[in-house]
Each structure stands twice: as structure tokens, then as C-alpha cells.
Image (tube, rainbow, N blue to C red; front, side, top):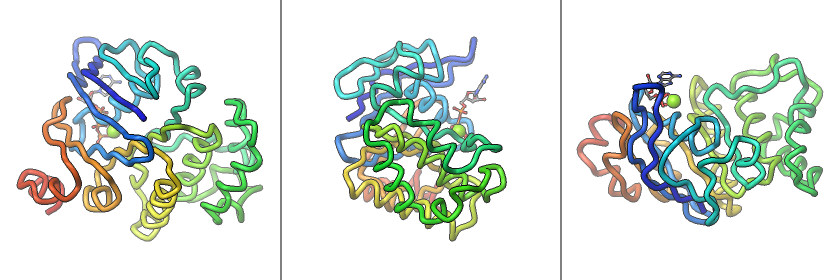
Length: 231
Ligand SMILES: Nc1ncnc2c1ncn2[C@@H]1O[C@H](COP(=O)(O)OP(=O)(O)OP(=O)(O)O)[C@@H](O)[C@H]1O
Ligand SMILES: [Mg+2]
């Protein structure tokens, strides 16, 4: 469970995120939609501990994390998959996954098996350097690496970015499987159609603020959402 209240984040004089409040209920999947530059990534980076200082409150299972550095946020149960994946190119799939063992999940090899079951392509490429894999495979690895920390909340920034439609489907099948398994997920996505087909609740950001929110059915019927994101 993640509750964000009145979050504000700036880059110097640029107020990129203003008064953002959102929630991810236990076991649920919330999505944030919005155009380029709306402040989606800044919101996620602030939640994940990569953007400091911020004002407002970020509660992860009742615990305030808005002043914590990244490593403490991870240790408290939030894992972030950034835009652009950021896997360690020269290291193999296996090595990338084991880098995240530090966060201390005692059953790391069990989680690793689950990651390989979720993404059979990663299992086939265990010994391959991450940098030589396709964008889709790197996205799978980035998600797998986040899962290694056994997060209470998994935060994903545009996992479909730059991927071919067939690969987007594979990545989203995995997201749906995780959600079915009870994983709480906060997802930022520009592909509104696919995002609203998997989410329990959605938010639309514009110019640093949340301007519309609701369940997927109501968002799909909202004229502004239809025009801007579903046409
Ligand atoms: N490092 C930075 N320094 C200064 N301004 C920034 C920086 N990063 C982002 N911004 C500005 O903050 C605002 C929000 O950017 P952000 O990256 O959060 O948007 P976004 O919704 O994730 O966009 P996109 O869909 O392109 O990923 C934009 O006006 C952007 O130009
Ligand atoms: Mg972004």
C-alpha cells in the first residue's frame, strides 16, 4: 500500500510536480497517464527516492519515506524500474539479477526462479551480457531485477517505451501475472489503451498536476482522455 499526498518536486525554479496525491491499494495496480513533460517520471523518481528534496508525504505501508535516500526506500519495500531500463550492459542476466540480492530477501534463489518462470526468455539467456539483448529482453531484466528485492510496491516507468507491439504484449502479460499474484504496482504508461485494460484505478497528469482520476471504465469514457490518449 502506497499513499502519496500533496507531493511537490522542483528542478530549481521549475515546479515539475505540484500537489500530486495518489494511491496504490494493497494488491492493486494504479496507472498514471499523461503527455510528454507532464511530470510522470519526476513523480515516480520522487516516490522512489531518486529526487530529493520533495515536500508532501509519501507513505509506504504507513511509513513516511519522503526523506529517505534511495537505498532506504528499497529496503523498506519499494522497487523502481526507471525509464530506459538501466541494466548493467557488460554483466550477464544472472549477474544483473544477483546485484539486487543485496537488498536482503532471504529467499533470493526462490525469487530468481520465479523471475525466470515469469520471463522464460531470460532463463534462456542467463549467461548473456545484458547489453547484447533486445530492448524487450532488457525491460524484462529490469523488472526481474526489481523483483529480486521482494518489493511491497513495484513502480514501473513506461515499460512499453520503444518496444515492438508483440514484445509489449509479453511485458504486459507479465505485469498482469504479477498483479494476479497480489503484487501492488504503480505504472506510468503512455499507451493508455493497454494501461487502462490492466489497471484497477487511473490518474491523468497534466503540467505537473493530476487533472483526472477514476476507474478505468470511467476514464475510457472521459472525453478528454478519449481525445488525448485513446484516439
Ligand atoms: N533534470 C531536469 N532538469 C530540469 N527540468 C527537468 C528535468 N527533468 C525533467 N524536467 C522538467 O520537468 C517536467 C516534467 O518532466 P518529466 O520527465 O517528469 O515528465 P514525463 O511526464 O515523465 O515526460 P515523458 O513522457 O517525456 O517521460 C518537464 O517540464 C521537464 O522538462
Ligand atoms: Mg517520463
